[in-house]
Image (tube, one colour):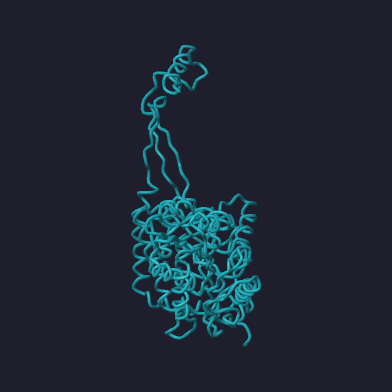
Length: 498
């Protein structure tokens, strides 16, 4: 076994971005200091006022033009993603196409979701006109991940921009080149002000962004880091939206399309080298169809291979330290009585991890309880779907989930403790721009995407405007006793019935 590839390392006040497939230096970027981060945030404040002043129509026009640049230069963007993550170009294209869809949706729907709406003022306040609108927060700090360096951060960036905010973006130290590419493309469309800025570096740079006085932090990463960010943000009462990890389950009922369920399992577990927060890590299948389902999964998994050549279905593990986590989870599962029907400990190499399918793994093992974030999956037989629901929900995480059942899909989906569920298709909720994306428990809180994602980056402003003088003056020290008596009678008529 050759030496494990190093993580990005500082070279003076810069650091090199390395290809996880070859260790080749693919770019060099500055390590921004706290002072530099603070200066970026100050620039963003002025830019935010200008950007807000463009209004919904002006911002939508710029965002649509940005989307056009990304679309026309898609091959170039995909190559940058491949260089820094090692994933196949087709996978880079998939995440980029989904991100483009989200930019388009946010630009088109921001006014409808965030613009001024009338609200009922009620009988007692019938002389008032009530409205609510959502105003920009100001400056949003976005800390992005390396596993989907286009799709995931743009799920925050595009919605924050559409809502009228300026954004300071720190990509992962593993994918700074992707972040720079996106920010540079935006600057071509919005050259007037630094509405979207890039900062690069390591944890210290991210910590500086959290403490810089931004109006909100959007973070995607591990639950452990998310908790640290929340603790730091509490010092300045900076609100946060956290999208952390997952241990997502897939359920297979007796009436499921087993071929489709097996294909979804293999793709959901192994695509992107298993480095997917909403990837399939656990499967609970009804005992009546378990043997046939497992056979189909095994047959498909045997034809999936990691590598850097064009025929490989997925690439290397991007973050070297994850290799030991994947190996330890497989070892623990096997020591506890589990069996590897495909792969095993020997599947974990120095860069690539080949597919591993585990069965008979105890529910309290690491491979079932903790996020593996690698191309492994556990499959367990259950007596019925009640047991499947119970085991699927017995986790500290609650991000995504999948159900395969012709008759009971919607019912089972409603019982899963997860922020999102797809029925009879793998991870489809991520591609629907109108649906909110986020989790519960250690998977985080808050939502990106959809109307909820737009409102996440705005503050509601309520306005009550008096249209005419009320016949009964309630808010005065000089109101009459007869007014109080009349109000009491009116309330009794309106609300006193049982």
